Length: 195
Image: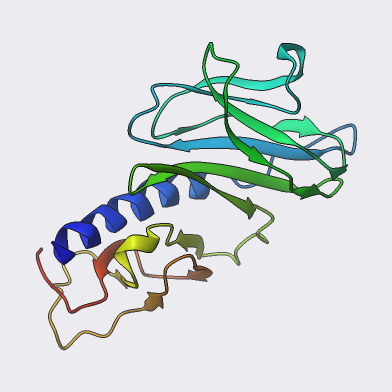
């Protein structure tokens, strides 16, 4: 059972990683903060994001599982962000983050033990140095526990003698950059198993 939770965590981390790597930035001409919605749910076919309970305040619509919306401008200061199923007025998640002018953020909606949850992440990473890339991993699978991340070159076989590049406690994240590493292998933090 533990290995199943670990692989579920690995899948959630990979899905998050794919969207975070592709989404840094999002400019604004008005000085608003930039917000996007990432849908990592399994049981919600499509999500909307609004800034209040009125339909005219909808920022993004129809964000399907495994995808991220485009960035949308939200006024700087305290905001109330509401997530609903597309076509519904029932609030699933209400989040009250602080938004800073000219900064970018992601509201990640995911499920854990059949409960809908959210995470608010700043997406203001600096540009990596030439010849390197940026990698951000977030462990949102709190019920799966710690997660080890192995960043390796292609063809590296994971064995018990290989030390993880990162060990992430549940609910934590890391950002790093480095040249030469091109393959990420998340594993439950109970030893290296599987290919």
